[in-house]
Image (cartoon, rainbow, N blue to C red; front, side, top):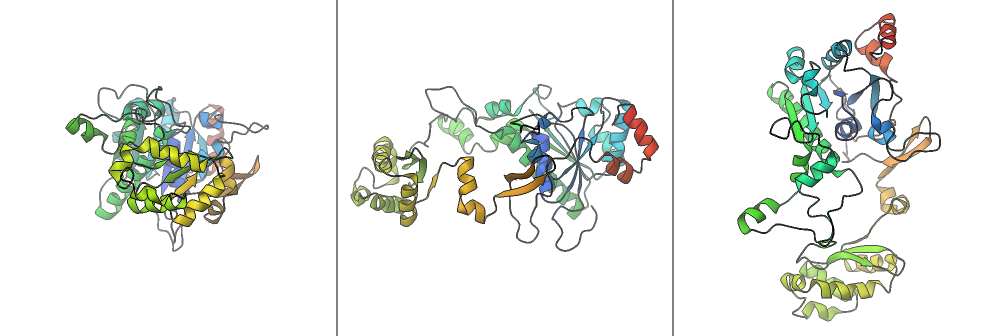
Length: 404
């Protein structure tokens, strides 16, 4: 990594080559790019990453997903299925600190781009490999999208209502989790390389494993007690009151009043202080046993009020509560505005483009959204000509031959 000065972005000087497509690999690249890494995204000539087409579109044809998932990245085109493209890929990766790929295991090796070959010329390389089931094991060769990882990692089984089939969440949770662990692994491996004089290494992330990592104590509960968690709808069993409650303006407010002192304040706020003394509700265990009855009484109170009135009462009593936000709520919320959770970035086709800001926030060297997703091959000349020193005539030949 190159030296950087005071006040620089925290990952400035780090070069990342991002291969693969759709979500898991690209979101890992997005996270690294948010904090200043130079992320060079490699896409096949022609249509590029399918994410350029996914999601809702504006009338002019620009997808509203691509500007986010490819923000802060440079785009180059490269045909990895041709030997000349593979040779060029090796030259590019030789200049990188990190390679991110999310092809099916064995694909990179088939192209002569396995870690052994790459590390021979770049021993400090950290290679992040995200796949459905990881690089080893009997399932390694199976195709595995994020949705499959969510199912086999366990989260689908505990999501939804017990009398219904397991639903999915409205976002690509498995892919995003795997990408986040991939970024964590990359930075951990880089720290070891820099601080301990180590070599590079492979960061192996299976999507199902990233989901499994979030599954709390489900494994020991099953093995040691015979209990297998299932779907419980909007509540956690025996944790009450902690639920969503309806209001008279068709909002839902989540109220979490399950701790003893908090429940006492909640009871006072809704005009029933005696609840806190009633043996049916006075302890955590008792509230859990009488969850449905307690939720019904709180719902009767919230239904007579607007969402804002419920929130005002809970805030005044020091009871954790929050409205179930839509995108419209986020855009109007003063806390979102104060924290700059949504940032507006100029997109060359759409104009002012709102998107979620960088997380987490660093006080001294914060991340930043510098630009939206680039045009396909926008940085071919900069990367191939500037970084690799390939002359204009050779670049033209590569372009005419369908290599870039």
